[in-house]
Length: 369
Ligand SMILES: [Ca+2]
Image (cartoon, rainbow, N blue to C red; front, top):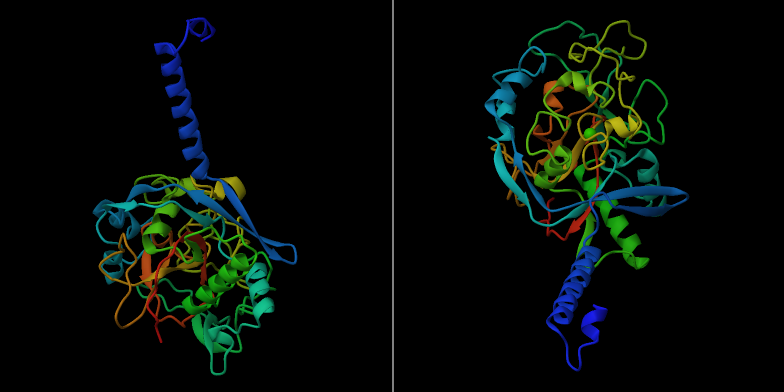
């Protein structure tokens, strides 16, 4: 450029070109600077040395739902899910779905320690802890080890149990995912986060902490893959060391495995495992842990049995929150990215159900009783 500077007066063509190129680069740089990098981490300080990481996911598109081939695998010998049930149709046929705005997704399901910070800070009582409240927990008296076409589940509504004591047959741990919390409880946790971050001047303009939508959850679960049974691909065996599902591990004080144990390896746990226990191997393409398996993750949408929606779906009656990802006691066919179920209601809770939060665009949710 120094050569053109020697030209007498004015600017040369090269000067103009250079200036234009420089401006473009600067503008692009600014634009890039405004958009977080994929996988960028925001760490929330919840107080008392407790933290929560959310990771940035860019806008994108994916195939929501499943194909007939995928469902045939899920209900086959390896997948282990029951064929010919209504449940197979809840995923809907695979269709192109867009996530138009990037958002921040928590790396893990909300842990007991994180939920405890909320409960201690606010004195909040979960639905299960309120007078007359119950939550579904494992009944250790259960003896249904026989393999039948209709397995009788050992989960029963119990009083006096809650996220503080989900009736594990072993001590509750601070790094376990919180369970026995309802959709309403999960949303109360999000309100606390918003109030806390707002008061500290850390809540970004136009965004809120909330449950992810049905579509956001599935997009996040797939970790950048357009379509596959699991976030790592279609092969179950590649799930070794990646997820917590019903495996060969014995139930506490038992000598036989749960009849749904179709994974032929040990995941290390009869029930729940600590969040992010599997480390790098257990994280998907977006860096998110335990998206398949672990605990069911309740999302913002209400349940439409025909399939999930690109935009959040809210029912006018019969409010049944959607849960995602399968749980530690599920067959592999029920722990795929596309699997979705409707919970019994907004105040229902279970020791197989937890939640994960996100930071995303504000979404108005109709009041439900
Ligand atoms: Ca999970």
